[in-house]
Image (tube, rainbow, N blue to C red; front, side, top):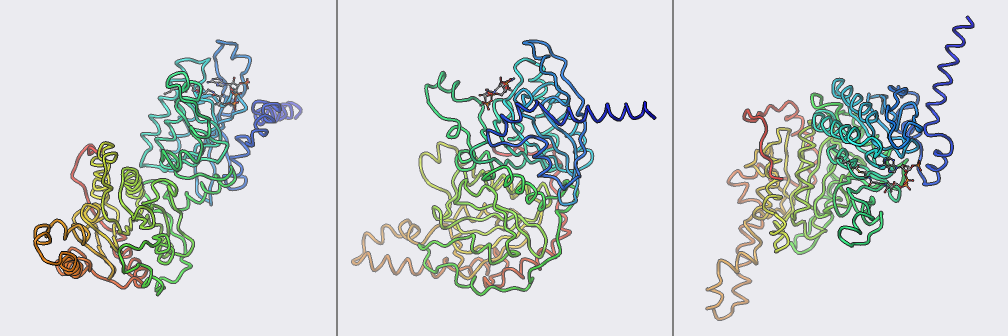
Length: 517
Ligand code: HXC
């Protein structure tokens, strides 16, 4: 009896030591930076009491630079599994209180093990990142561990959802794991991602830059597009992670999780009939369109601040998760530029990988002209959209709300890239280009020669508009499947998704295509 008690006491003591991470001083330091400990974060993220930790006794074997003096059970990461809203997930959380959460041989082994477990169990994996980067004292062992993690990220890509939450520094080699995952969530002020820090940059390029400008949440969610979400703080980032998981299946063999519908499937919002101005020069907010059509308050916008001329996000229709791709006419008239193309193409592939039907709203005057765009490779970036839609076998439905000119019409989920149902509103304009531009090209000579060029131009523009600034020519030739009243959109989409629920579509047999990147 006493011997058993001693064993139990020993285990309890070890558990207590493990819970202390890098010790009280380091925990204090962590808190002073406005950050929580790895275990506190896990507790907030997972359903109460569901966390099952593994590998908490593993320790490193290195001695260079006296690193053996800082040997702590569990090393610099906490790993295990638990539940989010009742569904299993695997998780790892870097522990900054132990050697700055540096990526070590042991951290690599623990993370790789949990990722393998996630992949074999078919459950999402969530990484809570807070690390100074490769553990310098371990040399190549640390680099090898990184390589192994990247390999696991690539293997899991498109099979199980992978979410990276950045809650502190994510420097050097650390950035490539989040970049290989599906979603990156950062916190404002406390998280930074960069390959080389301000000091190195100053030495190499002489540029002086602070951490926030270099790689803060604002920078990555607005400028680089590395981050899909910028949360105000850790609580918001972790709540967002839970919310995001609600739209995703546990793995690519499952449908995304439906919930009992709470909104009327037949709801026809008459406000939609007035939302698109008849003057093509006047903007409107596509987010309002989305708000009127999908289940109330279900829209979770992804990449909200990056390339805001395009909109992508997850929502529900009659309880079923769907992916939304759209132009935003209120920003740059909804033109497609390099960043918008990247944003759209990436999101289409996420939807297709995880069996999430794609609904596209089209209102774009085309691709952004200009030297910077051409030299930046708009050709290959724009091609990504076609590639992603053409490759996607999930149900695809498009609605042309207004302008669908030229390339933008073709690439944005048109019939020709195998969209299952193409609908248009009465305000739709489907043409090679806008009326003014077309008249200038087609009738240049005639306008030069005539007596009253302005009156003649106005007449020709009106004639062109009558023909192409309405959807009926496209519908008459079957390029558009139906012209619908905007208010009818919600019930029409729900009915179409029901039809397409068990859609079968196959791609030619291949190892993989060569996606333009
Ligand atoms: C081991 C490290 C470390 C490292 C810092 N520490 N960097 N230990 N390996 N790479 C230690 C510190 O000595 C300190 O130990 C503890 O971690 C916390 O670090 P601080 O600097 O005190 O923290 P903070 O002030 O919050 O600053 C965080 C930071 C800064 C901004 C990230 O540490 C920094 O700039 N580090 C360098 C980041 C970097 O360049 N990493 C790239 C590594 S190379 P004590 O004992 O005092 O608590 C790389 C290449 C891999 O990753 C490529 C793979 C493909």
